[in-house]
Amino acid sequence: MEETLKSNKIEGEKEIANKKFSEALKNLKEIDSNYATKHLEISFNWNQIATNIKNIEGEWYLVAFRPIGSKNANNDFLSIAKEKAYNEAENHGGLLKYWSSEFNQNRECLSMCIWASRDIAVEASKKPLHTIAKKLATESNYEFYALERYILKKEKNETKMKIIQITSI
Image 1 (cartoon, rainbow, N blue to C red):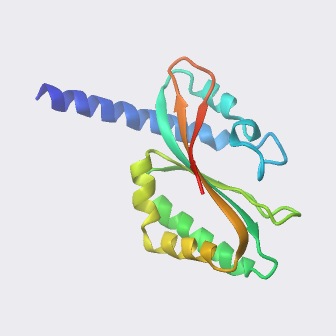
Image 2 (cartoon, helix red, strand yellow):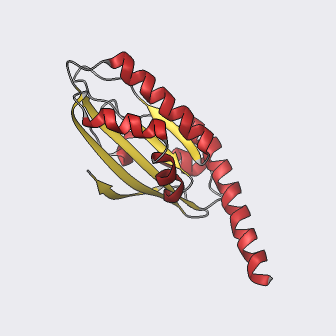
Image 3 (tube, helix red, strand yellow):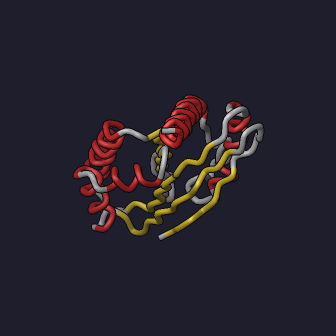
């Protein structure tokens, strides 16, 4: 019984932290115009976000997709697939922030999803419309792409966000 109460309290605290973090992420902005190719740590206003949620702590999961578009890509089709995958992720739950740019003059782009947890992100990635979007990435729509995964970690009373890269493909 005591263990259940403790577990419920922890889950409630995580929910509050996720809600506050999601709200703060509405102010996420690029601070380097070369964000499509630079490290995430220096490309966005993470510390401002951390300052806005100084009184909470948490750990979140970020997936970054960095493609270079093919000259022959059907960009309208890609945009529709991206929008559908985003809507599917929103409906799945646990998506705290989706941020995406347009392709730059070098056909480079950055899209990011920030999730409440890795488990939720993995579940969402198996949904049908996400599967279609992933398939498009393996076809001739991109000359190259990198998929990066990070842990975002924020300690209570800290004004810095730790961004820890865990994989890159």
